[in-house]
Amino acid sequence: MTDQEQITHGQLGFLCFSFLSGFSTLFLIEAKLVKQDVWISDLFAIGVSVGVLWLLCYVQGQHPQLSMAETCEKLLGKWFAKLVLVIYLVYFLDLGVAAYRAISWFYTTAILPNTPPNVLILLIVLLSSYAVYLGLGTLVRTVQLILPFFILTISIVSVFILREVEINPFLPMFQSKISEVVYGGMVSFGFPFGKVVVFGFLLSQVKNTKKIFVSSAAAIALSGVYLLMASYLTFGSLGMNLTKLSAFPFFSAIQLVKFGEYMERLEILIIAIWTIFTLFELIVLQYVFILVIKQVFKIKEAKPFILPIGLLFYALSQISHTTIMDLAAYDFKILPFSTLIPSAIIPVLLAIITLVKKRQRSLQDLVS
Image 1 (cartoon, rainbow, N blue to C red):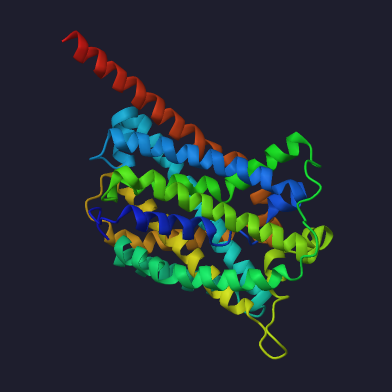
Image 2 (cartoon, rainbow, N blue to C red):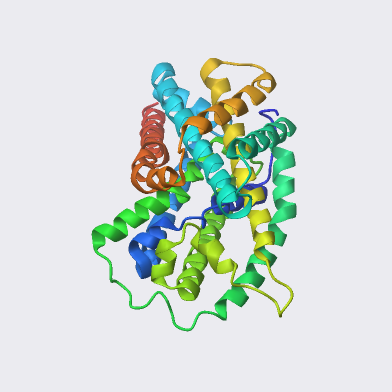
């Protein structure tokens, strides 16, 4: 792991899509809340996340030689910047712990009921730590290799689920209250689209900074299409009531798919790719967490801290979200609000300060 690893804007887009898509369709909480109007909530969340991405790209464009952590220190001052970075550290821990618990509860509930979740989490921690040690370049090349298989598999499965859809499940539209739709958008922004702020800490490692916004915005849009498609197919194949009662509704919809009389259990392929995408998410979170730690504590060599930080994620996951209902309640009641400061308010603050300082420099140049 080094701070000098360079990736292309296209590789960042691929990584962004896999990061946001992962287990985004696992619970479909916003779909359960606003039902057929979920597309409105998701479009709202997508629009806000693209706006946040634009702000991050604007700030990075004004400070091309600095990382986001260094930019915070330059714009906010040493001590206030440390406070902001600590907020991000807590946010990354929250996201990581929730992801570890989500994948462990999914496996122990639907796939491997006799396997202790702690064993699964520890195994993933060790894999993530090793991947962080290998570096960002290895990760993005792996994403490029896996992504075509995901697109092909999910496309085939979706076509066969579509045969079970008899009417448009998004009709009639506008049946939810405005407050419900807005809150559904907040839930969707909290998970998964608000996580786009994590990539603000990787922008300085992209070679062609001028194309970052286009490729990453496209990744957000495609991730939104995937989420909307999953909601459409789930509602259409399971119905509203069964979707609301199911712990993992899209997974239940996928289980309906079979080719002929003998070829069944195709959901195993989807599970494998879901798992890999969630592993990508955890690797990125741990990688960015270490980058911020280096800036906060002025650490020169980060490799000795990779495994201890992975074990920190493991330890926190043992005392957090001890039941699947706790995790669902966290995603529904807490994350929509806790994500606002790191994912929306701080990027807006950084962009405003950057704009003000840019205008001040322009005025000084005119005067001189």
